[in-house]
Amino acid sequence: MIHDVIREKALQQILFLPHAALQMSRPERMISPDDVRKVIEQGTIIEEYPDDSRGHSCLITGKATDNRPLHVVCAPKEAYLAIITAYVPNETQWFDNFTKRVAQ
Image 1 (tube, rainbow, N blue to C red):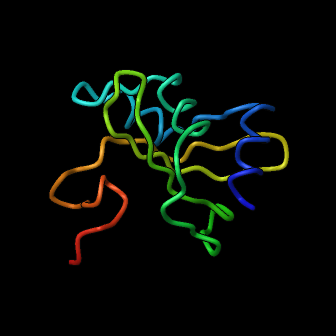
Image 2: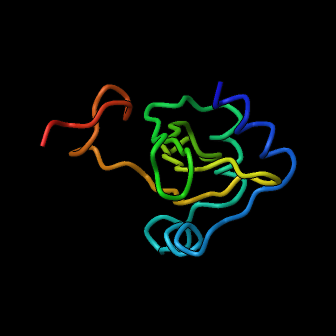
Image 3: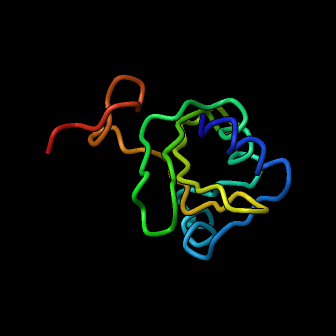
């Protein structure tokens, strides 16, 4: 199960890719590494991307340390967990507690 692999790799090492670091540090987001860790540890996988060019990845939803909803896209690698991006989901694009996309 991919969630078990993700948690195992996160215990080894978490690598924040440049895009993730940029998105996390945007003034309107200010997402901390602790926020991302909490989502990885306690969140729920809502989408999987087995054919992603960056390797099998997934979207996890959960709560940040300040209880904001948060989405994290990550991909397990050989010796670490790659964080591709993290963001606060937009209410106009998600419903059902930010677990399902609004039809486009």
